[in-house]
Length: 295
Image 1: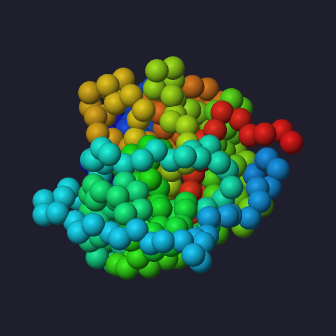
Image 2: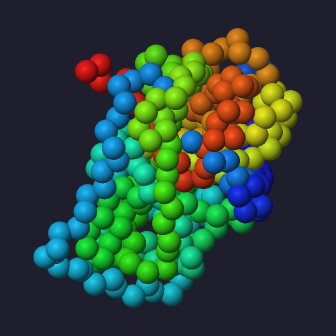
Image 3: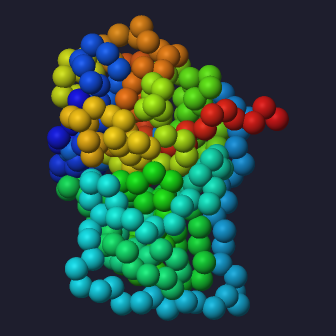
């Protein structure tokens, strides 16, 4: 099922859609149209090292930012415009500890001093946009791009603020486990259901966009997280889910935990979801890997 509206609690406003279940008694949700950004933050791997974002060199030349041409698209809940670079380290589980929020519409570039590809606004469908910072160069900052999977956007200095991110969520597809970390240390680990063959839960780094109320009783009466990621194969999802995002949510029962039954979403228990809803804020990084290193 496609969610048409999500409402922001951190800032009250509508967002966009999540990919859901082809039928209400099967598979799982991807998130759709209206978000809530009010939820504040990964438990059973070796604690990751402290977050490291490459610092710019003092003698590094600052590439100038080309003026943004008129008519650039604004990134919203629909799939992001093409041309943005791939995340060079999509499976890196080092926590990202800083989020960036635009304070006005700003141009997003494909490289430092590169081509402006789109505009990032302070909100997406009324929900404040906070994106994890992944890299810095003198005069430029790279963030995870919303409404895309494993893509970055480069932003010149100015027109944005930053906020500390204390949490991280890591999902292991092989063991069907979700772990919540705070300040790099595991807090809790839960069993989850993931995407069925052909609609696998996308690998890589993404982040929490916001939350949406459950549209149907099958979601257990608990709000749903909409992620920045979208399905890897949009044509594989049911037609009613076109344009939706991956979601993190609960279900009416726990019968399929540990199985691959969803349309790409991450499904966990009601109590686990309620815990995360009270602790995780928008902009928090979520990383999906096949498995974490054992040493």
